[in-house]
Image (cartoon, rainbow, N blue to C red):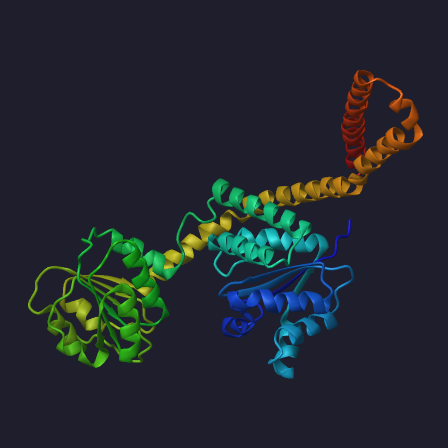
Length: 409
C-alpha cells in the first residue's frame, strides 16, 4: 500500500539545537508561509511540528520525494538561508517514507525518539501542531487519520507503561528534592543566576505557590526580567556580598569559572541565623565553595547528585521501551486497518449516488406516465416501497462489499 507519506525530521541527533532553531516559524506566520510552500511543491497535505530539539514536516505527495525536493523546500520556506545552510540542512535531514514514516510518527509522540525518553510534553506539541495546520487548511483526511491514531497510541503508552513515571530533568528532580524538606510557601528563596535553568526552576516554584524570591544576576537587566515574571526582587550579582535580608533556600546556577558563593559571602548572607539552610547548586563547575560544606550545617543538593538520580531514572524508563514498542506495533496495525477501511469508504461513496440516480430515472423518465396514472394514495405507497428498497440496497450490499474488500486486503 502506497500513500505518498513522507516525514522530514531535523533533530538533536544530527544537528545542534541552536541550528534547529533557525527552522522555527512563528505561529502567526505559519499559515502564509506553509500554504505558499504547499502550493509551490504541489503537496496534497502538510503538517509542521517545531519543538526545542526538533523540526519536522509531515508531507503527503503524489510523487516520489527526492533530495531536490528537500532542497526546494528549504529554499522556498527559508529564502534568507545561505547556500551553505541549505546544503547542511539537506545533508542532515532524516527522511522517512510510507510505513517507516508511520513508525516514526508513533515513536515521536510516544517520546522514545525524544532527547529525553519519557518526556510526555511531546504529545501536546503534536496535537497543537496538527490543529494549527488543520485550521490553516494545510491538512486533509490522511494526516487527520494519522494524527488521531498517533495521539491515541501515545496515550496508551503513557497510561499502560512507566515510560514517564520517574523524572529525569534537572529542574524536576531539584524540585522533588526540595519538596522533601517541607519548606513553607513563604520561604525566602535566593536565585543566583537568571539563565535558562534558574528561569525554569523559578517558574516551576512560582507555579507551585512559592512567592518570596530575590534574583541576583551579573547583568541586572536579566535579573529584572525574571523578577518581573515571578514577582521577585532584582539585584546585581556584585551586591550579593552586601545582602542582609537572610535566606532559607539558595538556588544557584551561573557560568562562572570560580566559586560565586565563597565562605565569606555565605557567612554574610546568614546574618547570624543558626537554622539549617538549603542550597541547590545546579552549576558546572559548582558555585558553592566546598569549604562551606565543611564548616556549616546545610542541606546541599548538587548537580552531580541530581544527574546520578536522572541517569538511574533514565535507565528505568529505558527498560519500558520494549513494552512501548509492542504498543506502537499495535498502533501501526490499527492505523493501516483504519486507512484501508477509509479508502474503501472513499472508493464506494459513488454507489449511493448511482442508486439515487437510477431511482430518479425510473420515477421521472422510464415509468413516469405509469406513476402519473396512479391515484395519490397508490403513488404514496409506491414511493415508500421504493424509498425503503433504496436504503436497503445501499446499506446491505455496501456493508457486504466493504467486508469482502477488507478481508481480501
